[in-house]
Image (tube, rainbow, N blue to C red; front, side, top):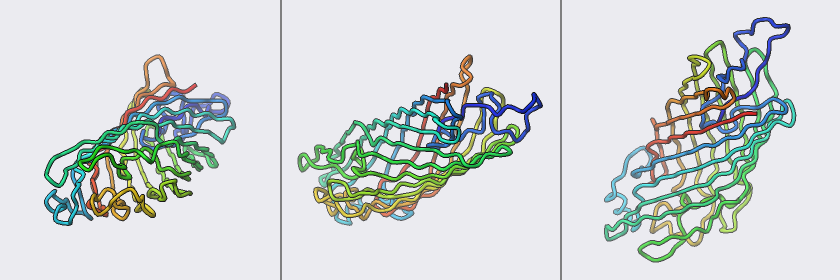
Length: 329
């Protein structure tokens, strides 16, 4: 997520190597916006950022097959989710107290909106907004040579988002399902390993990241664990802008234990055993330097699923769009 600030100057005024990872132009081998903790800073540098995330989920899928409302009804469910919008506003602060260590703090605010169908065919909409789980990360760069870097991320999520949000349903005021809660309610471990490479105007990279719920929350369950694997390729057209393409594989597990306030026989999204799945996304990204501000950058990325396999019936993702701004000092 974001861009890298800094330059590796050639010694003695010699010409920079085509393998040089950062050239001071603001168009370094930076990862797409959707890569969280994808770059490190040099000692003494810091960076402010903002990211807007929007995801659209429309329709249900069981395994690899799309399921209609009637097919889900025949399984005995009275409430059936039809669509959901997920919005995330995220502020970030990164600083580097040491040459090889960068610290990243992210503060998310979420807005969730879901429309479902009741047993009589009526539709109802639930809306939730508030603070999500604050995340802290330490990024440790342990290899850097010939235009290539490798860094390890050790991150932790704090249970600042609510897990007891209630909403109106045809049965009255009830606890909302797992994916309509603002946080995990637990302390989470967020490891990642990120590789970046560049040769002249071409750059590439990969990241493997995961989330592990270390504790059971106060509602008696652990939200799903999972891992992501991304690879990308980018081309810098000039010192001001570059374009990329990324493929992302995501795999997530079921919820462990149950929230006793939820009825999984009534609503599939409230069933702890219908939360797992895997998905492959593919899409482009663009990064543009702001004129007169060489260390400021605008970033956009869009992803569409090319493969989905869900333990459903479960709402499927149709597209994801992210836009952000980064400013280094």
